[in-house]
Amino acid sequence: MSRIILQASGLCMRFGGLLAVNGVNLNVHEKQIVSMIGPNGAGKTTVFNCLTGFYRPSSGSIRLNGEAIEGLPGHKIARKGVVRTFQNVRLFKDMTAMENLLVAQHRHINTNFIAGLLKTPAFRRSERQAMENAAYWLEQVDLLDVANRNAGTLAYGQQRRLEIARCMMTRPELLMLDEPAAGLNPRETEDLKALIGMLRDQHGVTVLLIEHDMKLVMSISDHIFVINQGTPLADGSPQQIRDNPHVIKAYLGEA
Ligand SMILES: Nc1ncnc2c1ncn2[C@@H]1O[C@H](COP(=O)(O)OP(=O)(O)OP(=O)(O)O)[C@@H](O)[C@H]1O
Image (tube, rainbow, N blue to C red):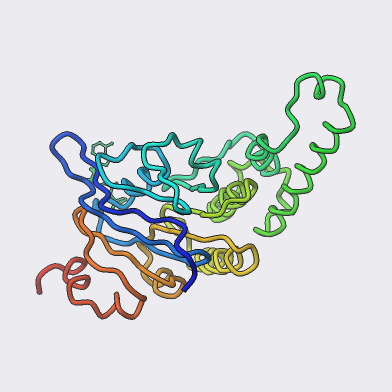
């Protein structure tokens, strides 16, 4: 099996008296599509928030390519190649699709103030590269024809794809998607599935997702982690998870 790029061990997150995450372990292997599932309120988003530096975990360790990252601020973790989307779409709605991608590119553009003021050849070159990169990603997510439309006017499925393209602009190693299929119709969900598969197969990105759409999870995942009430319940292949009586009970309750 491929090497582990992200490893969380004994992860705990406490909010006052509530232990929202209690001893979660995760191993994410390079170039795999890994899902985290569990009933509402199980602690999935809280795990994401710990992994991406939005929360400092109460205890436990998180390693990215062997390096301890628990407690690092979000922007430092993002710089190390871990990017994410959120449950609710977070785009600049009054900016065009293209502009939304250029914003993500700012770290790679030559931002030297004088160079920008004088529009030096180096500045123009980095600007052109940013535009080309944005156009490339718009094409990859099938949004090139709406490049100049404001993000807020796009269909919901298009907005979700634009968010993923924005993540890809920063050339991540690990892409984390929080309920990417929420609010999508079946056609859009199929497109999303194809897109996630393409990102892994053609761009070598590793994907960790939280998702409630079991059809999508079962068909796309190499490995699935299940958490319930903050605690790890099971992990394994889609088939192993589908057949696990503890998982069935957590979702359906006692018969
Ligand atoms: N900032 C916070 N302060 C206090 N409690 C929180 C906070 N964030 C989450 N919680 C609580 O932690 C628990 C886990 O929430 P979380 O959002 O991680 O669950 P989830 O599995 O992502 O749920 P869903 O599938 O419904 O999105 C819940 O009881 C929630 O109310």
